[in-house]
Image 1 (spheres, rainbow, N blue to C red):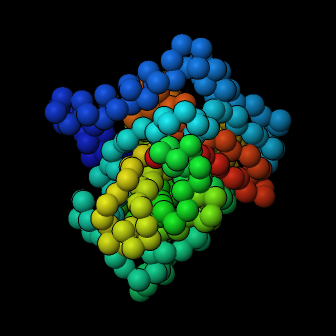
Image 2 (image 1 turned 90 degrees about the vertical axis):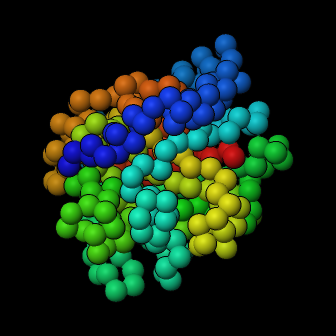
Length: 274
């Protein structure tokens, strides 16, 4: 489950890294002093029950900014499926869907794992952080074994755990999925891209933002204690949000709130200011 290629994507020199780093540093600077302290303090994780099947919750200031601060721009990694690195799944019929647990088209695979509902709310920072209606979100992540459909050995013919949704009147989208693994070298995360419209998303054009959602530690530990996730516990122990090569320079706007139980499924919620 090692993803050396994705790690190398973050080691392509100053010319590649500097624009992203500057963008993120500007976002942190805008939070400033007490605002930054408050945001970081809001990243605390609490668990009502630390046993598997309990009701963990994670509270954070993730995505709650209303001062015009945009969510940080991040790499899409080596497995985006948006045409920038090989295959383009965005132009395929069936990609617009809310339930991304199964493949579509001629593929028939189904991703196994603890159920996860992902709720994102796209905010328009140019309009007082009001919900951005009519935008589109393309979301993807790895499976329980840390593999990415379309790219990883054994599932190159599958396209599960990828989908596009149009935002509603309040800027919200929702995906039904499974909890992703923690693979070697990365903190548990979910990738997404924001487009100005559904037409733009399904033609992979005019992208507004590429970013990543971070999952809190407490619910991850509960999920990874269940069958099929054992390697994730070992992998997660080798890194942290503060050392992860994406989140280490600040994650206050990217740390999702996660609620629910292993038995009934988890829900990850994040505001996405663009």
